[in-house]
Structure formats: C-alpha cells, structure tokens
Amino acid sequence: MQKVIEASGIAKNFGNTQALRGISFDVNEGEIFGFIGPDGAGKTTLFRIITTLYLPDEGSMTVLGVDCVKGYRKLRENIGYMPGRFSLYMDLSVEENLRFYASVFGTTIEENYELIKDIYSHIEPFKTRLAGQLSGGMKQKLALSCALIHKPRLLVLDEPTTGVDAVSRTEFWEMLGKLKAHNITVVVSTPYMDEATKCDRVALIQEGQILSVNPPEVLKDSFTRKLFYVKASDKYNLLKILRSFPLTISAYPFGDSIHTTFSKDNPLGDLNEYLLSKGINDFSISEGRAGIEDRFLELMGTESIHYQ
Amino acid sequence: MTGNTVISVRNLVKKFGNFVANDNLNFNVFEGEIFGFLGANGAGKTTTIRILSGLSKPTSGTVMVAGFDAKKQAEEIKKNIGYMCQRFSLYDDLTVKENIMLYGGIYGMKKKTIQDRTTALLEQLNFGQYSDSMISSLPLGLKQKLAFSVAILHEPRIVFLDEPTGGVDPVTRRQFWEMIYEATARGITVFVTTHYMDEAEYCDRVSIMSEGRIVALDTPEELRKQYNAGSIEEVFIKIARPSRNVEGGLE
Image (tube, rainbow over the protein chains, first blue to last red):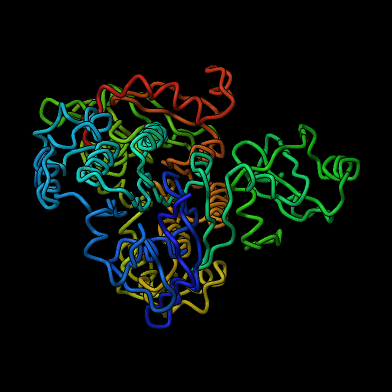
C-alpha cells in the first residue's frame, strides 16, 4: 500500500517547551488516521508540520511522496487543511467563503461541486448568510467544504468537532467516511475518545509523544486488566469508597458507572463485603469491556487512584 | 439537595427580531443540585444562560434567580452567581494570584478574606508552584480548574458553567467533575452545559433543548427509561436528530 505520510523522528521546540519529542508514524493511502489526545499534546504543531506551515527542528517527513520542507509549494496544492480555530471569513457570506477558497487554488465551485455536494447541500439554503452568523455545526460544514473545494489528495482536520454537539459530530463523521470513495486520505485529531472508533487507525498522543498506533479494536483489546463497572445511586460517595478499597488500582467515573480495576482477578467477594461495610447497599458490579478512553487512561500512566 | 428552588423560569420567551431563541421555557432548579443543560448548537442554550446570569433581559415571562427578578434586578443576580465559560474566564496576561485578587475585588470581597481564600485555594489545588505564573503559560486543564475555583471564590448560590471541559484531557475532566461534586456538597447549585454526553450522566437532572424549547427534563436514569436508550447520548440523538431542519439557528 502506498504511504501518504512517512514521518521519522519529528521534533519541534518552542523555547523551552518540547512540543514534539521525536514522532514517527506512517499514514496509508485512503485511510482515516486519527490523532487522539488532550489539549497541549502536540497535535496542532504536528499538523502544521504536515501542512508545511512549520519546519521541524529534527527528523524528516514525506507527504504524498514529497519532502515537506523542500517540496512545500507542490504539497500545498494537494493538501486541504481545516485548522482548529479560524478558517472562515466571518464577514463574508457562505458562498463568498467557498468561492474565495476555490479561487485561491485556481479552481471554481462548479468544477468540484460533486465532491462537496453531500456536505455543502446542508448549508446551501443559507448561502447568502454571513459565516459569522452560522451555528457551530454549520460553520464546521462550511469549513470542510472550503478545505475540499480544490480536490486535495490529503485532508488534514485539526479538531473539527471540538465544541460541536453530539448530533453534528455524528453527521460529520458520516461525511468523512464518504470521502473514501474519492480516495482522499484523512488525518484528523480529536479530544473525543469515542470518535476514535470511527478511524481506521488511531495514534494516541500525549506530551509530544505517540503512545501507540493501532486500529481502534486492537487498542481496546490491549487493555491489560479485567475491568469492572460498579454502580450505585450516590456516585460521588461510591467513587471515594472505591478509591479507599485496598485492592483498587484505578477508579474512574464513566457516565453512570465507575470503571474500576483491581490487583486481584476475582475481587468480588472482598468488594461486596467492603461496600456493605461502608453503608452502600444499592450497588451492582459487572465485568465490562474496555473502551478507547479506558485504554488511554491506562496508557497515561496515571494509575494512581489518588490522582489529585 | 434541599428542595428549595433557586432558579424559577416561567413562560420565558426571548426574541431577536423575528427569531424566537427561547420559546416559552418553564423549569425549576433546586438548591445544591447539578443541573445539566443540554442541546444542539444553536438550540438556544447560550441565550437562556445569558438571561439567567443577568446579562440579557427576557422578552416576556418571569425568571427568578437566587430570589431576584431577571427583568428588574439583574445587578443583584450578578452578585449572587458565579460564571465560567470555556474561554475568556481568566486574564491571560495576569498571574494566577493576580487573577484571584482581581475577581475577589470585583465581587467586593474584603482584602483579608481574599488573601485567606487565595492561600487556601492554591493549597487545595496544589497550585503553589504556579502562583506567580502567567495564565497563558498554564496547560488548559489547570486553567479550567482555576477558573472554576475563581468562579466560586465569593461562595455564590449558583454557578453557571458553559462547556467547562471542552478539549480537556480525560483525567483532568474527571478531576474537574470531582470539584463540581465538592461544590454541591457545600450547597452551591451547579448549572452546566457540555457536549460530552457521558458527563450528562453525572448530573442530578438533565434538560435537553431543541429549537428554543425544552423537550425533555428528568434524571438521567428516567430519561434513559423514557426513551428506551442505553445512554444519554442515545437519548440526545433521538431527540435532537429531527430538529436538523433549523440548522440555521443562531448561536
């Protein structure tokens, strides 16, 4: 399979801050490759190197077969980039924004309309509205249309779904899936762990380093311990009590249950007794499957139950 | 939770020209509860929060917050609430200590009280080493924890949190929620919006807004039952999906 990105030992510093500490990875043609990690992990810096906006301090990177330092002019014609914050002109209308991006790349909306039709049709009824007056979900669709209008071979999306509601996020991922039919490779970052499941492969990134690169299913299966879901009506109290249980290794709230791991394979007898002794009577315990976020928390190495 | 009502909203309507951002809202928030205020982008949440925090006046209806009328006593409301949003809550070019002093001053707290609270706060947050750091140099997670502490520095009756955890890492997100639990244990009412649906499960009650109206309001457990869903995320998608035709909604 052809490689769209080959990165080796990429490092970037800003003053004393090591934003990237020697990152290596490959992206295959036509895949959706996700970078999952918290704010400050280095995702944006990395994306600016991929898009030739920053030069790496160390290491080398080839994008679409071209060196991203020497070949930056050629690369820019073939990359679509949707930055995290600003990519739209708020005082231009929806259509003016799109037309502007098309003209910058020497093309027209009409020429590549097929490619953006699915996405743009959602906002086309509002094409005379100023971009500044769109809701979050619509801005995101317009920004994606603008990033695609010159028919790039690689699409780089920096946190496209941050601050966007759960419904719009679902729709957005459906749209990305459809780009595969056009053989467009997508590199995307997100702080939402659940979105990792929509990628073909996922790199977990933290403090400028890649913790692992895997398909999402493999990532889930690499959780090392037995995971238990513990529930009770007073969640905060339950959490504090679980942390004080001597066999507990980690205890994290996840929605309506607390995901807990123990130093013993079968802790149930001891745990039952302990919870009852602490006055919790309405609890339930079941063994559950680990998700991406469980694995991420495990990899972050913050297994100390007293993580304050 | 005591059962005392701290926010009471009756027939709240807010219009911008012909656009109805809030369409006859009715709900109560009780003292000491964590009230989750969910909705799609453009559903009208920000409009409501601005009215509840005294920044904007209702077009019609009665809104009482901490015993004060949002139409006539906006300034009194502001003194009795705390507010934190995802951005702009702290001054980037002031240090941690300076930010705390500034907010204490704005809320009219006594100098001695501010100093005592500052010391206690820095210790509680394990922030000693950062007390003279510029806010701009802090990681987002620390900023958000500090912003929350500052928002409740004056022990308000209610604190409004508008997407407090957006983009924050999974560990810090959970620490943040523990701070929320601690605040409610002290009797502070928490009114919170989020796009992380798992966080909705941490709330005592959750409302879901769509097209300017509240279409669901109950405990997370009841909502899951009512909508025959495994999670609040499923409930949310079931409710908010059909409303896509108002995509043009203003934020």
